[in-house]
Amino acid sequence: MLGTRLALLAPMPRLALVVGDEGHDASFKQHEGLRYSARDAAVYRAKLAGCPVILGTATPSLETWHNWMLGRYERLELPERASPGARLPAVRTLDMRRDEPEHGLCKSLVSAVEERLARREQSLIFINRRGYSPVLACEACGWTAGCERCTARMVLHATDRRLRCHHCGAQGGIPRACPTCGNVDLKPMGRGTQRVEETLAARFPNARIVRIDRDSARRRADLTRTLEAIRRGEGDILVGTQLLAKGHDFPGLTLVGVLNADSGLVSTDYRAPERLFAVLAQVAGRAGRREQPGEVLIQTRYPGHPLFAALRGHDFAGFAEAQLAERKAAGFPPFVHEAALRAEAARLQIAMEFLKEAAASIRAPDEVRVFDPVPHLLTRRADLERAQLVMQSPSRPALQDYLKDLSERLFESAPRQIRWHLDVDPIEFD
Image (cartoon, rainbow, N blue to C red; front, side, top):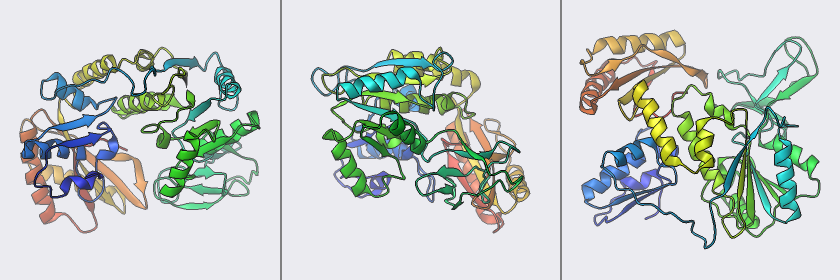
């Protein structure tokens, strides 16, 4: 059986093997309806069936790596690439403080693309942000186009000249003038895949440029045809998001250029470096999958960061051990167990009061620490105000017992105007 998360719930009376492909991927966590981790469920189902489970990945989650270090998992390595003669690509950082980008691209990256075009090899420019620009702003008064339903900015999409919210799906036209001061000179700030495609088309007018993101590949059949054309060499420069980062084999692709990598280094989410390393390692793996050597160029203002040093050396083990040491010192998973109680209401005060009352309704045992409720970073989404409180414990049984009592109380007494859920082992805190 081949399937997604839901396949784990299918009846298979003679189950003998479970394989979780890309076992690190955050998409294994179900965030709507019945919330669960398909990766953890796969491990548990294999245990019930008495059969092996394989979590295949080049960048294991830190929880998986920690379980291997504790002797709970066995580690099997594939030291060579699948194609004969193929080697891991050379990874270099481009210091944006010295090699100042023009229209978002460093001169060294532009030169590398020119070399591939001359050799009739393919290049991939990776930026994990779709649309034309993440912000439309007025430089005169500082106004930015925001979503009326979310505490988020609208993203400018140039192909259909629309502003879209990537959180709730709201959209609207581009204003002719600033609604605050009347200035007609509104500027796009930052870059997405559409703007990078436009820049490359102006710089390389004779190159065949293919953009792949959720906007250009809305239907699976269209994406399949585009990928097959790329494999046949019908494209010189690819521009894409995570849709191109993993699972694809492009024989002629020898160069990967990474834009906007630094955003993962300054995030408030303690899992951001782990995600950044995983996506960069995955996208780097698209280069040099045949005899021609591959090269990866990462634009950054922090070339000395340990994460980039680990990428240059293809040293996931060193990166994982450093991250685990930081998490242990800070008291983060996998050294503690977490859960989050999240609430949505018409007003933030209602959600916050609900969480305070919920925390006070059940006395937490000494092993469980309950933090004060706080608003989400994205406080309003789709016209609902959101808040959460986090619970931590070094003992999973103690946390589970507390959550059982808490959920029973909430099902009995939670007011109807509140939407709430418990997220065990949360992986996002937006």
